[in-house]
Image (cartoon, each protein chain N blue to C red):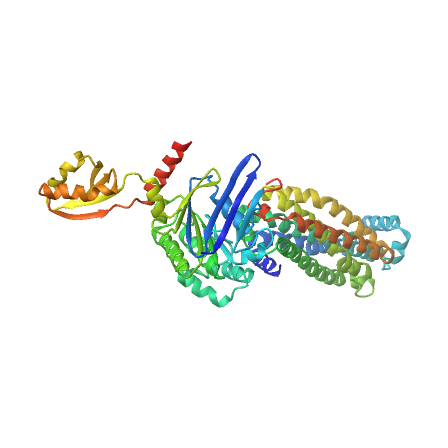
Length: 305
Length: 269
């Protein structure tokens, strides 16, 4: 798959602070890449470097095959950025904000109303943005971001402070655009919202991409004890599981969530239960959530250091 | 460039906090103050005041005295006031109006967070700077044009009957308004926008803009007064110098704006 964004040994400092430190990262075209990491990890600087809004001190960056510092205007015309706080003109109406964007990106004004309708903000286009709620502002910022049908969408903490409905609008946008072959980079520290969305997860810290991979790959690499969910008609028949040699832990949470020493032990474990008279009704993998994965990766990194 | 200018002007038009005080300022200097002074001078019956006006006229340079029209001291005093003493208003008012917009232009984008949007947009830095410049110039030029027209009407109506008919604008005023005021405003704004791209807050930008524009105002004040006294000799040269300085200022200023400064990095920000 061709690469949409490629960072190679990129460093950017602000005085004594190194915001991005020897960052190397590739984002495949048409993929959804989630940048995870605490505040100060370098996510926002990475987005700003990608569009050429910031220049790098060292290293090279390519976006859609172009250097943002040389062909910045072409790069920026094919990208859209949704910042954490929607940057809107408060004393202009929603419509005026969108027409301004359409003019800057040479987009057709005919696309304004459909974009606003798509995010449920069309009813408020005649109102000044200063009177909008946080959710309405974000919806307008999202409508603005898709006006020129960007090839790359960079979302920097887009759901911060949003109501669930607006947050869902963001995630729906991500899925829809990715379905149309657009490249998405989502920066977040809200792990649950990136759950199941990412083709590629990047754990950022200290300005570096510390861990990169798909959620499943990372689960294989960093979750040492695989988990399964087991249930039975007579739940008392499962009580012996916690003492089984192949079981690391077992906790009831609707059903029994069991962590095993190794996934190969599962058939033997189930056979033992059946042999002891348990009538098993459910055995399924308990895939780690992104949150679990995140903390496992952080633990692994701390172990390395 | 025009897109940026258009949106800034629209925001300005919708901002009553800006245009009401600025409209008031222009009204005071182009209408209120001249009306008051000319009314006093043309309707006075005080022999003391008439004598003092006569004395003031005697202190003016010879060429100016020759150009002053009117047969009575009051008429000559009103003519002098209209043509010479109020000329600097034509520079100070538009400059004040434009610098109020210019000081806020770039640092305001940072404060609102909209600088981030512009930094990620395909607009070039020069387009953004020139758009801001244009949006700052238009209110000043508009004030100059409208103020000049109203002022002309006012002095012709008040003083014209005393000096044998409508006499304003004189050649010197045309040169001042068309050839000298525009480059002075552009020059001051290029420096103010440069300051606006460097400082951390609007308050700092306004303070710096005041400091920057003061010398320009003083220079313009002197130039406008002197130019009206001897327009033919001075006008062309002063205009040329002002235009050259303005173009240099614009070119230098437009290079001062960077995307990083829109994000709040660089300069003092």
